[in-house]
Length: 330
Image 1 (cartoon, one colour):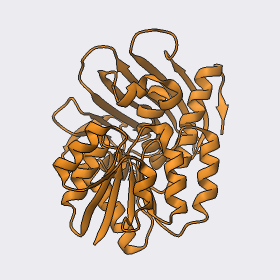
Image 2: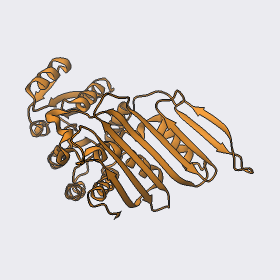
Image 3: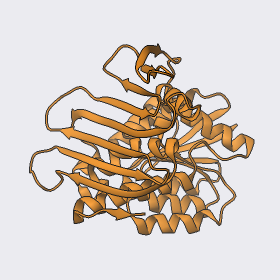
Image 4: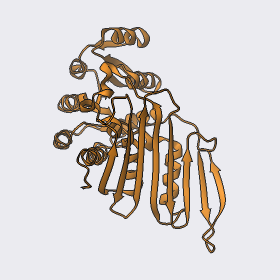
């Protein structure tokens, strides 16, 4: 039986706890949270041991896997403690807040034989997986341009309103656009150059919008857009990948999860659109099930620490570009 402890009882911590409670061969053994009310609610709802400090949970010798679901600026310290305590770790994205913390984690990871996974959940979303499979299979020819959007919903409010604290969250780029940055890296490989614009700091309204241009080393150009609004709205995502022989599009506001438009081999004109509906599963459950399987099978999880750090460095480069107004080369 794999014993899991979850640090953080906010939205993601509650979700992770509920999933671990139902995964076979897993025991949710403890949770930790600084907030007395949330900690008591977790104890009542989950029937597990609770700690106030994440460090206390990490020190519990019965815990095999530590799940970190606290605000971004708290990740590095807890990862440091968990790795040094020789625990398996699953951490929510973004894995850390700064490049210095990326450097620290790279050094720490060398010292452990345990498994470390990161919650870049889009890699587990069936529609996105299906789109990538088609790209890699060459169904749209040579990929050239991609466009993504993520957002539309109201500015999030978390514990201590930490999303509104740019120093803690990194704003919409590091917390939201990073999903698509990671997905595009998964599809196209390493990024060579980054240019970004954001409204962060330009308005007092509780909203932020960002636009990022990525040039990949293989020549693909991607336009990544993300936004939080200051009013209730519909959260949605879109994906478009265009290649030499066709185009893939996806929009969560439509009924068909993926629209595959293929060009005729001779005329180079789109002549067929095939909707595809992958099985509906929870990508959050899939990523945690993969983490558990990685521990049991002594293999890397689908999203490794190295992959997450590489994605985070691209997002941090976008923040640098937005702040300086210059292109950042990686």
